[in-house]
Length: 185
Image (cartoon, rainbow, N blue to C red; front, top):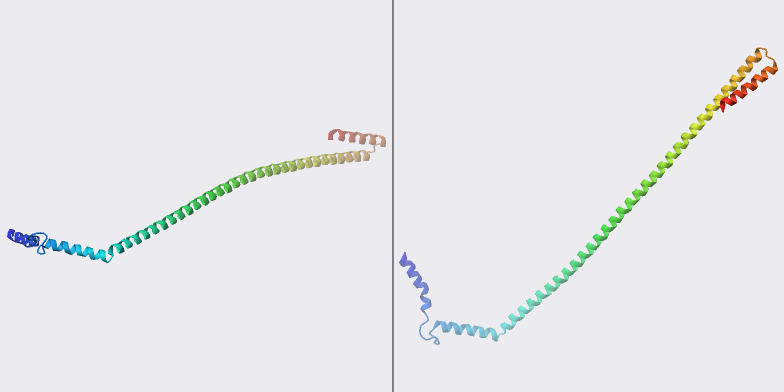
């Protein structure tokens, strides 16, 4: 196995030993390869391949520069749009805050109005209760007067039926009326 690897290495290295003799000779393969390479480069320069490659590279650089400029323009446009949206968001937020503040103020005003309406309603109810009390009091006073008049009339009727003389009956009626007046006051 060892001999096989050694013989394989010698076969692979044999072209490296092909260059014999002086370097500037056509028998030297290294010199021939150098001449071929220089002729190839000369042909490339003769046909202007270097100019074509330079033009292609310049065109590519111009294309990249154009794309970069377009990208910058798009970026600036995106930034201006972003700034515009940020301004709009701030405006909307301030409008929302204004709406909330107005709603709070409206709620406060509605609460104050409700308080005032409640006070007015309570005052009306108190006035109505007082009116009902006054009406009941007047009704009670009228009822008492009516009752006193009925009692006086009944007393007068009793006196008349018993045969009382007119001067005595008249004195009794006056006395009953004065008693009723003192009791009512």
